[in-house]
Length: 206
Image (cartoon, helix red, strand yellow):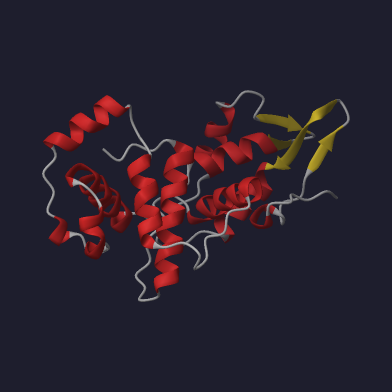
């Protein structure tokens, strides 16, 4: 039986329908078991309920169908689910990161620095440029209260750029991406993942 080339999804059996050669399918029960087995206590969705997951897939175009008494979900909808829940479920976050690496072959190892990530943050507009600039002008933020911030880079950015970086770090420190660590490379990896997911998903941080 065919399996997915995304490592975290490779355990999901893929099914085909001879009357629908364009789509690939996963049994709903297999996907629910996958989510439950990969669930972490820190996940924001505390209980994987069949009714909630099934309802979400019903809202997808060609996302759910019943074959021989078993519900199947399209692989496209599985990927859509993962992108939609990167902020709530660690396994979804992991899947999206693996997709991004396959698309662009990016390395999140020690080649990157915290400053590199800060430069990316400054260059990315998470809302329209006008709205974001207005928000940053009116925002008051105390950088001494942000534990994850690397203050030694403050002089490398202007006032509004530093505000944007502070806002990124504020949300990073409260997110599911942050796991307290004294290891610099692990922090780089966590911050890089957060920044990339925000860019892909167009998450509003302002």
